[in-house]
Length: 369
Image (cartoon, rainbow, N blue to C red):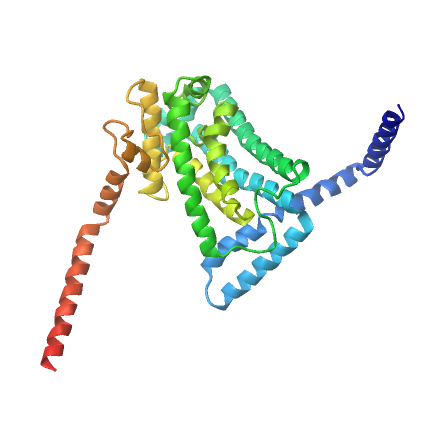
C-alpha cells in the first residue's frame, strides 16, 4: 500500500508541475506555438543546404560545406537524435508527397478541362469521377497511412533505445557522411527496396490467396484511376508490408546515417507522387515515364482480372521473371524508344567515325615523320 501511495503522490506532483508550465493565456499559447513551429522549421535546413552544394562551385562550395556542417552540428546538439529523425521524416513526407499529392487532387478537381489534356487517359483519369466523399476518404486514409509509418518508425526507435537499451536503428551524430558514401548507400537501398517490393507485391498481395491479398484488392485496387494519393491508399496492414517495409528496411539493415535516410526518403516520396500522378509530362521519360505507364497497366490488368503483371517499380524484375503485362512495353522498350528519340545510334556512329578518322590522321602524320 505504501508503494501505491508513493506512486500516486509522485504522479500527482508530476502532473501538477506539468500543468503549471502550460500556457495560461492566449499570448502565452501563441508564443509557445510559434516557438515550436520555428524549431520545427529549422530541421530541414541542413538537408536543404546539403542539396544546394552541387549547384555551386569553387570557393562557394567550401563556404556551403562549412555552413552545412555548422548547421547540422548545432541541430544535433540542440534537438536530439530522435527528434531530428522523426520530425525530419514527417516534414519530408509532407513536403515531398502529401502536399503535392493534395494539390494535384485539388488541381484535377477544380480545373478538369485543363487537367484532362495532360492525363494519360484523358477525362477517364480524373479523380472527380469517384465523387467528393470517396476522394476525401482516400485522402484521409493515405494521410493516416503516412503518419502510421512515422509512428511505427518512432515505436521501433524507442523500443531499441529506451526498452532494449541498444543503439539506435539509424545513425544520428555530428559526423557527416561523404557524398559518394551517400550515393552508394542510396543505390544499395533502391536495389533492396525494388527486390522486396516486387516479392511482397507479387506473391503476398496478389498471387498467394490470403487475407492480405483480399484487403489489397478491396482497398487500393477498388479503382483503376491512378492519382498521386493512391500511392499510400491501402489497408494499413498491406501499406506497412508493401510500402513502408521495403522503404525503411534498407535504412535499418545498412544502418544509414539519418541524412542518407532523409535524402532517400525525398527521392522515394517524389517517385510515388510522379508515378501515380497519371500525368503524361514527367521529369524523366525513361525512368519515371516508364514506371508510370507500367503502374497504370498493372491497375488496368487487375481491373480486367486477367494477365496481371507489372509488380515491380522499375520493370527490370518483371522483365527477368516474365511478369510484364501482355502487349505492354517493358523497360528495354522504353530505353530503345528514348534512344531513337534522341538519335543515339546516329550520334554514336558519328562519334565512332570521328574517332577513327582522327586516329588515321595521327597514324599518317607519324609515318611522314
